Image (tube, rainbow, N blue to C red; front, side, top):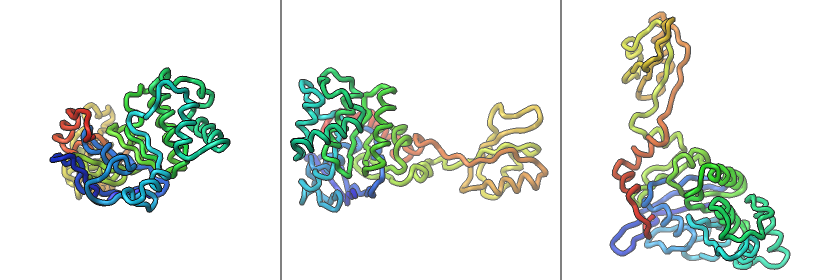
Length: 322
């Protein structure tokens, strides 16, 4: 449904994107993840036809963004980080204006406005002036304008930026509902947002795709890797370390119980749960629990992007490269 092939963009001597390639299938919700200044917004603007690329190809629903821009715009709903609202208009007036821009008129426009207001939790708010709305409700109006022409693809750029926790929960729930009927690209630097909404993610840093895959695949790229928690009785760290594939065994502080049960963190080169159980049995010990644990997405993100990329992202200022 969405495909970017070696997309590049330069602003004079500054390279914002270099050979960015990824794809999003029908009905997927994919996180586009990176620190501030990584190139996320530039990519979104190119995919939606708001910004020309310097090189490469981009297609939406089979249409080339550069050769068939109007066909692409008919199939894409775009929510930029700052929704394009007119503060002096009411919600109803604004959505009617956007509907007419999208080619809707008369009863068809009225019915569609009612549908998207219902869908985005704005029913009954048509008379409210946009300038009087909280940021959370302005985001809802932004989503409504992106949905007004019923596009199959939604591209959302930092949809929860600047929201308070309550507003954030509401917008995330709304996006989750929209993802059941749309293909969604969600651009963000908020890792918890990706974990809450996206089964798969593309990680971009310094204008390049650094990694992409399921969240489990991305977490597996953390330098510490997968580790195993094991609770045992009658066997210590040194004996557990003799199990095949085990690299290191670390006691978990304050886990020793009065009856001899203790917990250990086991790092390894793969899944060693069966090997650990065999080793405990050989030592005539007992196992109460054994569980493979993955590193947090935050750990994987830092390892993929690198400390330098994270630092650059935090220091990035507003500008054409975002």
